[in-house]
Image (spheres, each protein chain N blue to C red):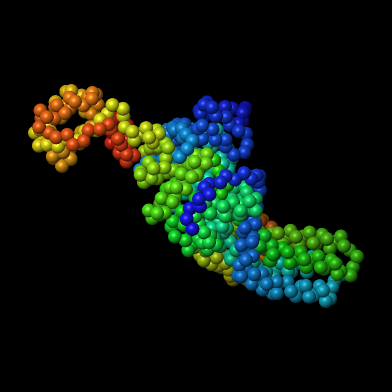
Length: 271
Length: 340
């Protein structure tokens, strides 16, 4: 097909508001992620291994009220952390690295979009997919529990539902900034994926090795620190010191987010 | 304290006013720079660069490292100047870069396409990021892909495309949102002659539809064939600018003269000629021939007389005509009106 003889035609449509453009990126990441066979398999397996038993228990046996300890145990399961680490590694690995390898940053930033919007779109899409593992199933489980509960104390059940939502949101966010940070420092998707998963695994192994000597080591294990944070959200006692836990969460969420912003900001101007 | 929008910047080009929101309004001077200085550490990329880019297709020429890409990035508001300012359609890049980028299309020189997408996905995706609704961007995406000549291949992943097809997709993503100002950085890079001609034809078509196109290229013949106006930049400074026709027309009153003869005769002729009129430039060509640019020699009858007396032949004698390559080279080495 040669050059179209119809010549150039102008476009007269309306533009959307600047602050809505971030949703284009977010939606694209979410849809692209859900098309991936690997992501679908991980989501199905995680549901079977993490939540299926909980749903069967609630549906078959029911409970008097939604119990905070029981809901918290869903997040404390090592299986959930393992699947969350895997899923985060898979979905975040190409989000920045692909733009690095294709040098497509310039196409984003030659448009009316800020570095912050770009990152919010990318991270938002990843967090939405993570929510399918960390947020949606436990919230559904909590709702089903409330609907099938035999007792009349709905208020305490709804409070637990609220805690479940907060804990689910934390679990969905927890692994994403680190994964995105690693994705922003390499242009090879495989390096980012393996790096993300192995970082979490190595920390988990170190934590498990030294926790017998000193329980304070448990804070550096993603599974244990996430579980401690979830316990704190549900108002349950935790073995981990609150200050150390906050520092670890900051280390795993805020520091990678800052590094990520700095990396992308530099790339935006072609450095 | 007043906002940047409230104040009229004294450096803003005459006749331009800054719209408070929305994409830039492109007036008679869609893009201008005033005393623009941008540096990367110790390297000064733009050094007090000032220029007014008129409407139409404008060629941006300069050697590698001259500051062309830096100027484009500064115009997009991606770089903060240390000094001076860039105004796009009356908007200041320092404070209104998002509005500016909404009305600008950019085709980078290097590979920048997401290899795992197909052309329709990529063009419509960036159309949506430019603010188009999904249904508009898909329809418009197909339209601009038709325009650039990407057929059914648009449904294949971009990783399988040839260089020429990638260049066309890069152009398509730059025009999908119909920007009034377009930056094309080496649009024919890596293309075969047929592809280059097609690309230049596309640029002509876009330029003829009331757009301003700033075309950065190393291929001077392309710039000469497409651009209405040329800006030459070197070491971050403006070296020369003007309408292409005027630049290649040569200076009024300057004649190009080619003589042939023995060395003594040519030397004698040049000496006598220098007394009779001004020699702007003299170049020896292989010992037996010389090319001269001369000024103020009247109708030429005197020259023929001098040549006869000196025993040299006049091979060519006509008003000075240049090509852009000559203009470009003179800008750097000096010679004639343009490089003096």
